[in-house]
Amino acid sequence: VADLLAAAKGNLLTPPVLFFLLGTLAALFRSDLALPEALGKAISLYLMMSIGFSGGAELAHQGAGSAVLWAMLTALVLSAGMPWIAYPILRLLVQLQRVDCAAIAAHYGSVSVVTFAAASALLTASGHTYEGYLAVMLALMETPAILSGLLLANRLSGKAADPGNSAEASRRSETGALLRETLLSGSVLLLLGSFAIGWLTGAPGKEVVAPFLVIPFKGVLCLFLLDMGLLAGRRLESVRQVGVRLAAFGIAMPLIGATIGLGIGLLLGLSVGGCLLLMVLAGSSSYIVVPAAMRVALPKANPALYVTVSLAVTFPFNLLVGIPIYLWLAETAVSRLRG
Amino acid sequence: MQLYPKKRVDIVAETALQSRICRALEAAGAKGYTVSPASGNGARGMRQGDGVVEASGNVLITTVVNTAVLPAVLSAIQALLEDYAGALWVSDAFVVRDEHF
Image 1 (tube, rainbow over the protein chains, first blue to last red):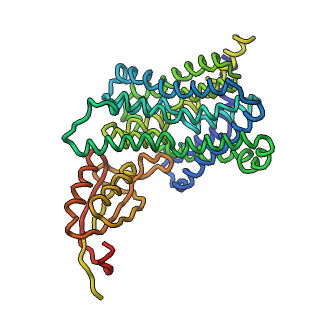
Image 2 (cartoon, each protein chain N blue to C red):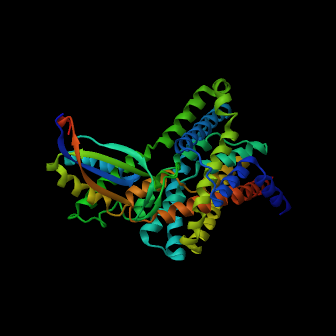
Image 3 (tube, each protein chain N blue to C red):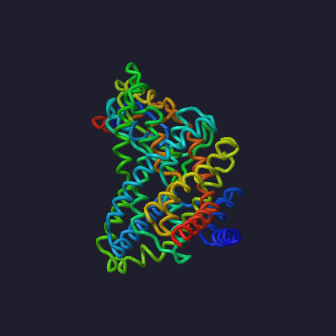
């Protein structure tokens, strides 16, 4: 437990976490501090490019084996499966409407790129390495959860259809277009593409782009987390409106997800670093790709619920408390099981 | 200079609706439209984009159409706005190049 406290303190007193807290405070005090919208989007693309490329270069260094295929398959199943675990919890314990439960559940199958980035920054700072293909798992886990969310909301079956309603018909054709768009969404494409480029060009390629893609990563992450702190802080007031039960779900679900992630990580034989990142993937929730998709496909679901719980509860929880706990659990489990 | 009377339709809506509204406008007979980012206050309270969280953004879509296609445009957009934050208003406009509208 002393280790855990030390790890928690070590995680809290790092520039990325402190910049996040600075942003949160600025929002709470209603400061006029703000990042231009376009910059926030650009930085999130940068983070994906850097994570993808570094993962690919790492895989080129470690060598690709059948483990990569298993990891990819696991990622797809995990992303599609998590909403089916989240949904009954939401339905029975949080007791929200069916469509809201489905929309929120979809968020928890998907992932948060920034949480992954923060965890990988902590890993490199503490001397851990991780399997490069975790970056591919990140990419593959972004969208299958959307499909599960729509299935849970009955959006894909014929039951909810009302043939006489043309708005309903246009929305259904829109759902098909949405699925095509999100399955190849810009972030998935950029992550996979950067990974492929990193893998193909390997160490020489990394040397060329490191001054832009690798070395500034942590500083850029701080800037992005400042922005995330502002966004989360602005939504803190809404946490009271979504209710204690949903807020509790926003903390319990990452713990459930991380536990599942740890189990799977151990089965896949991942390193401590790999286990931590898989725990973060299974325990984090989306606040970019999935909310945008849910707003289009499930307009009756309340966005105040799913954006707030994902952005203002689960994201800060993972960043501040979750990651050091997960790292401690991963270290303990790996050292106990593998001596 | 000769001016031609038209109807101008302004639509403020969630970013999530943007592509559907633009497609509906074209299908209803509008020959063009202008899209700009938007934020402001209305029936659903203060609405401003969150940058990275695209789901909370808004757009202002403006189109200028012939009076004859106005009913088709209005009914198409009205159907789309159901369940979403959005507002729509119509005003008179005058254009110089009649053949563009």
